[in-house]
Image (cartoon, rainbow, N blue to C red):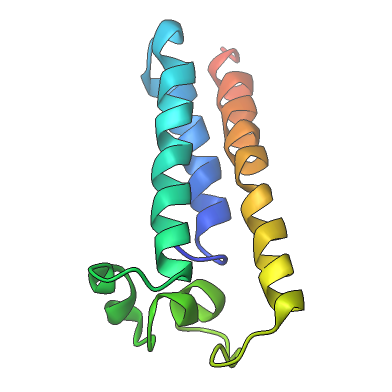
Length: 113
């Protein structure tokens, strides 16, 4: 999970929820999906021990480095100030939007012949 990878994965998860699950299970699946994304992403951002299997393959120094850089960018995460933490909070706040967008896309394509 990272700020680069999470939005497209959330959209894809929303499409999958709409296309693969019965209607009565979709809201529970949405809540569970958000729980997994928030839990793992918050854990990575706060460098919770034991999450190295998520960030090490991307040659990140730690979870926060992975969240910001995803093995692609070059943000120095050693001494992030409050503006960057506020930006992270804003990005986290968009997660439900991306999942809802995926569900909407899934509904749109599911109803076409």
